[in-house]
Length: 518
Image 1: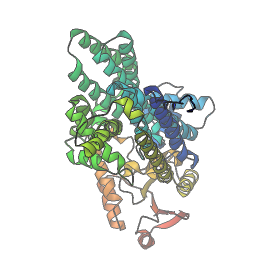
Image 2: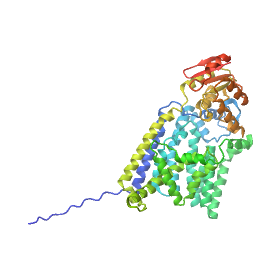
Image 3: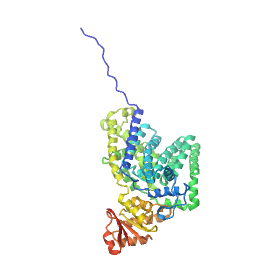
Image 4: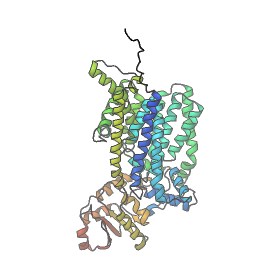
């Protein structure tokens, strides 16, 4: 006799929905991305790299009762107070509620840099029209080692604010140009105004980005009308600042600053950025190239032009847009091209799996988690690189000594051996903390020297290459830069031994720097 019974069916595995997959990746992007941006800050007690000029300008604002000063006292060079003031006003207000300037220049850039993760998702979703791919692009943006370092620095008070405003401005401007509404137009106008009031390079890129998307998407009078409203509204909202600056200093102050960029065609720089390895295992580079091929095949010329046109205009600003475009390309490369490529290797058929299949394909999801964890480890390691950009304690000792023991009209020539004086924290922070003039500091001169800025920069570049006193004196004379004191970084200079033979004697020294007076 056969015993009858019931057959038990195995329950079907629960499928991962698009929403679950998206918010899991997005949550990882925010959590891990914020952590790696805060980590360098926890290793330091001073703003990262730059910010000295903003330190002084914040003090100038407060000393002037928050009214926009005519000039800044930074480096005693009568530099027009023409820098976009929004970040500086934020710093000045925070000082008034009890925060120190150095605390502001440490924490505010970090908070704005963390906010770029959220705003990048907004932009990626708008440009890609797809939440899962936008979430992946956001994770890759948040965990690309080094891309966020420039925003974490003291100068990130304006740069990171500019980045946040730029991301929001481009997202809402794109939405307006594609499908205009009054809400999107008002938001685009607001954020475009914030960009202009935050940072000159981001303002330039915002104008270029809006023009590019206007060229690709505006096809009706209604779209053109809303685009015109954004332009007119931005000019109106920002006019109290730029109008006052032009009234005081003339239009030349802005044309002078505009000439400090690197204008021209820089295809070699584009190639260098496309192939650069930001990690030991070049996963991001591989996915970026796969995604680039994908957007070209799909006819997304607007993305290609938005990302690459700046390399045909201004090399100094171009990498900023790459920082936003490359994660979008990499997301396309991973979610669209890679699965199709694997399928082709297996079946010799080029077939793109549906999203539902991708989100429930365990090897793909586990591989992605492994990649994100690997990028997180690389970012944690890069935190030590960022930490080493901080102004050394010995440099701060020199500045404190100079402030207390030298005449107020003393001029200092600083030899660190670092040829790019624009990124040398010693050069920028000396006028701020020593309250003495440095003839080798170039920050702020972009507002006064016009086409002479490049000449000055080249001269200072050569000065840092000098290996003997005759070279130093000759180059200083060419720059019309007399000096009373000479500061030498012992790690990077070979001239210190010869200075006593030329009538110079040491007036201060520590474990890294020597200060000479003739």
